[in-house]
Amino acid sequence: MLKGVHQKLEPQESVAFFVRGPSPFSRMMFFCALSIVLMAVDSRLNYLAQFRQTFIAALHPLEMVANAPSEWGMNIRQYFTSHNRLLVENQQLKQQAVEHKVMLQRLSTIELENSHLKTLLKGNAPLIPKAILGEILHMGRDPFSNVIVINRGTQHGVKAGQAVVDAEGVVGQVTRAFPFSAEVTLITDDNLSIPIQVERNQLRAIAFGEGKSNTIDLPFLPTSVDIKVGDKLVTSGIDGVYPAGLAVAKVTQVRQSPDSPFAKIVSTPIAGVNNHLQLLILSLPEPEMTIEEENPPSAPATPPVVTKPDPKLVAKPKLKPNAPR
Amino acid sequence: MRPVNITTVLLTLIVALTFQLYPWSGQGVILRPDFLLVVTLYWVIRAPYLVNVGLSWFAGLIVDLSTGSLLGQHALAFGFAAFLALLYQRRLVLFNRWQLTIYIFALLIAERAIVLMLKLFADYDNPGLSYFWPVITSLILWQLMVLMFGAPTRPRH
Image 1 (cartoon, each protein chain N blue to C red):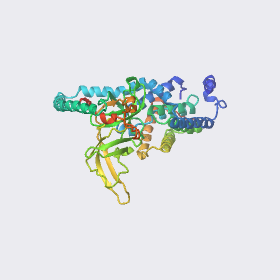
Image 2: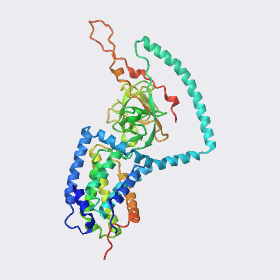
Image 3: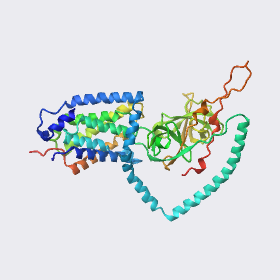
Image 4: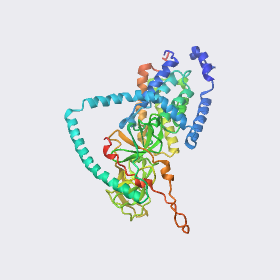
């Protein structure tokens, strides 16, 4: 409505003394109220998710344009990579491939044996999580949050909630999926927690991100807990999001303070988000897997025990060795 | 000071948005100027009949959408900065270049402070003083805008 008035009066803009529309103050009040409403709706209700998705999709071409210079830069750098370095890298990769092949040979026999044992125990066959390969687009534009944006979205089958890993370990979890991109919250974000297990002694705990400091915290563990510096933390798999056994972090500091009943355990993530671009987005376990239950004809006298086959414990990741670095 | 038409304004805003969308990383994130804000404020002061609180608010909303932050945070801050600019717009055009730069500095600080406040309300970590570094780079960008499009002030008679 304001626009119409302005367009009509545009030619005499500089001398328009009286026709300036509503005062800046009233405009400001109106838009203040509007943004407060928006913030409330966006933070508490879920109505705007679709709007956001549509907009991000519409912004995609502009993003491609914005990304182009850095891509050219990378291409040019790749083009000028020295022959020598490529040879060295090739050699290293070949060596790794051989090592991995040997490991894989053992793995396949063990897997076979494992699945055989599982079927004997009436469990389900081990589940190999499907994965989508993605690339980091940018490290998030908001200095407040620990997110990265990847180039795979709902169009490629990415859903919010999926775990994201790289060749070394867990990176984080998809928190928002847009048509052509997705937002991955890193495990160091203070809103993300991840169930872990100490590899050495199978002790289970929950790890929380620490936000800014790029570390992971294990709170509420007694001072007597058996965790040492250098321990490797892996996913325990009891959440149904992360398959069990993925490396998460390495303990760097264990401190006991006399005034606290809990130990202060700090660890740093293993995954190298800053080092390489490629990531794997693991698909969530099938929903029927978690609901599925067996009702064996048990003795009626005993209370009905619901035996849930634990699909997460079954899921050992096997795709790691091939993950490009 | 030549009058401007709306297409120039929109084109510069789109270019500013493209720069904003560039995948800044490392030190770049800390130093990245607020492209869209600087360009918006420039047009608010130079052509308040084209760019008012409403369009600034909308530019802020686009920043919100592209950063994935809570909708309305940057919008509110942009709208408020534009309001502060409009409040004294008649006087600002009589300022000399450095007086105007100081005023812009205050506006940029105000915008950052509002976003910081809203983020802290929404339970984010305090990013520390480095959060205000982009104000300096934004001022450099402002000087660039003045070089490219001319000072938004009227020459004194």
